[in-house]
Length: 146
Image (tube, rainbow, N blue to C red; front, side):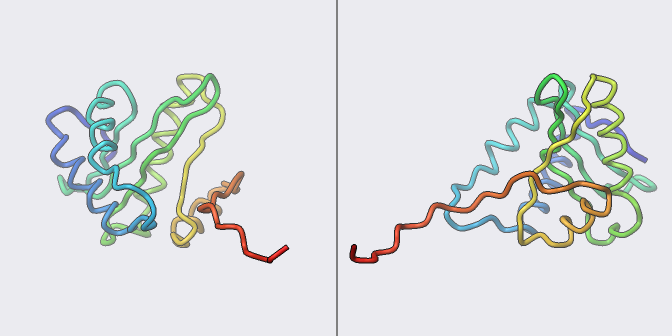
């Protein structure tokens, strides 16, 4: 079952989001903005799309998305607990996100995924997503002496 999160669900949303963050440790040069992200999600409950996937009352996953332009939606977070992976939960969450965004006039869904998250990248590619840009940390110029 996919349902919209309520303000009362925020502790569960926080728990799922923190599991997601622990699983995908960010690159060391980035500041930890977890609490800032959680604050945005909390404020977005009831305004943006914050969905919880459950089976028999057990929370399995989370999706957070928002309209990011006239025709563009942004999937900020998609997480499914390891025990529920490969059972279609992620696909159900994304289908619901897409349906809700389409009802708002959105025609394109953007998302970010870490390059090292090969499992998620493979799933997104299987669903037809294609990379449109990649980013790398700035590098120091090499000293070539001339």
